[in-house]
Image 1 (spheres, rainbow, N blue to C red):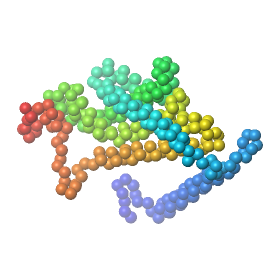
Image 2 (image 1 turned 60 degrees about the vertical axis):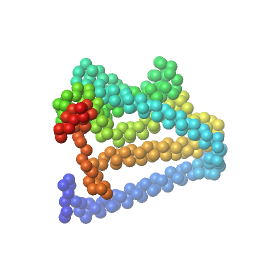
Image 3 (image 1 turned 45 degrees about the vertical axis):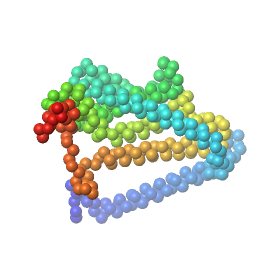
Image 4 (image 1 turned 180 degrees about the horizontal axis):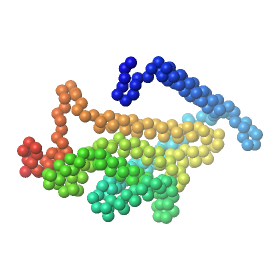
Length: 307
């Protein structure tokens, strides 16, 4: 019997049990989907006793050919992307500032920043939106954007701090040995490596940020879910509520799947090290400390200088 470093290879009984569990799981999943389709397709009885067709009735889907529907959905989608785009840029900038404050050598800087980060991370985004809207009277758009910037900036700050902490200490020591100041070492050597290392996690957080824009529904921001479910629902009537819900869900899924695909592409590209191409192995790039030394005109390990 072949063995693995982590665990023993499963025997006949374990493989048989695994196949049984897999078959039972698939059967239960298919049964659940079948029940859901039956529940959605059966006629509905309203509170007044009137019967309405099921969710799959053609009469509930005829609005899909209405251009006014898609124009409104497009406006909501663009509003969602606008809020997410502005919030993403602001969260990245704030996250960088938080990461530098969180890794500062002075306790008078590091401790207050840590307290602020924990407060923002523990506060629900919706409460933050309501607080900004009620206290600062910024309007719905900036209430949504500011809350997303603060919350996601705190998370990104912790992500970057973890990336900086995971770097070898020799990186910072090499930069200091080259004559760089601590701030220069952080900017030139440590932070670019930490950002590149944590980029897939940061992009995944951007996907979460995009979904959190739907909380703007509560504070009155006209994003995709509010336009699709509230305004269009009132315009077309309750008969089309499920259809509108499905359209909004499809738009969110398509957008998030596109961003998730981008995350996977970036993860594959940033994760490649020493890939062999047609021209043979790629030449090893100089380390960060040597690159930093050349950037400021200091001698490199080969004795060359840009002075």
